[in-house]
Length: 100
Image (cartoon, rainbow, N blue to C red):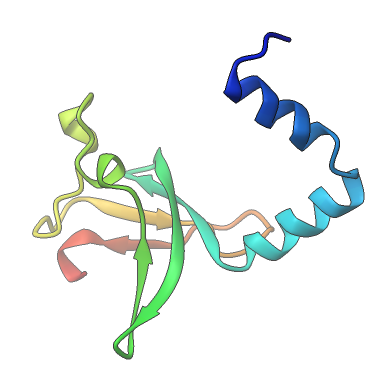
């Protein structure tokens, strides 16, 4: 590996014991979700509560996809569906974007 900063981080992460990495992933999974827009992977998000309201925090580029206009979230659409992964078993959980 070269001495570039990104490679150092990757190298350091590999030194973390597998049991600790697995536990961290297990803990994180309780607070995060995969986001799918109309059945296509769009990104990920973190479940949050702010001011007594529940929501999903995600990156701007996930909602306003700069590379694919068909994958931009439209919160006024009665046709777009937002899918979430909320369990580790196969399932389908979708919300109509117009209702969010």
